[in-house]
Length: 134
View 1 (cartoon, helix red, strand yellow):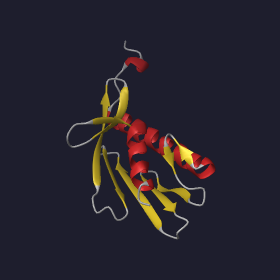
View 2 (tube, helix red, strand yellow; view 1 turned 30 degrees about the vertical axis):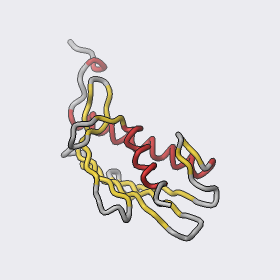
View 3 (cartoon, helix red, strand yellow; view 1 turned 60 degrees about the vertical axis):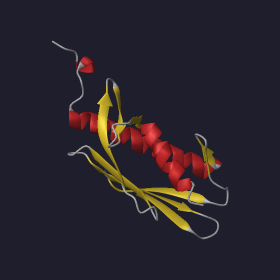
View 4 (cartoon, helix red, strand yellow; view 1 turned 60 degrees about the horizontal axis):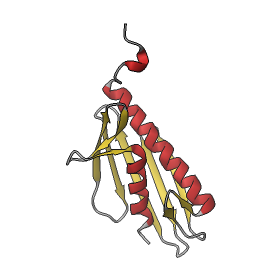
C-alpha cells in the first residue's frame, strides 16, 4: 500500500494547493506592503495603500490606492475544475491565463508557452505589474 504522502496529488488537489499557495503569498505580500511599504523586493510609497479582497473562494481583487488619488486593481479568478487562472491589471487590456500544474512535488502555474512558475513567483510577478502602474 502506498502511503498517502507518497501518492501524487489528483489534478484538482494540486490545483487547490497551487491556488491556496498563491492566495497566501498575495495576502502576506499585501500585509507587508501595507505595514512596511515593501515586501520581497516590491515597494509602494508610505502614502499609498493596498487592499486585498476575496469576494469568493475562487476570486481575489487587490486594489492599490495611490496618494495621487489614482486607483489600480488586479483581478484574479480561478476555475478549479478547469485548473485555469485568469488575472488582469486594470488598464492593461491583456488578460493573462495560467494553468495549475505540478512538476514533481512542486505545485504552481504554467503559461501557454509551458513556462512553469511557483505560486510565489506568479504572485510576485502580478504584484510587480500592479505596483509598476504608478
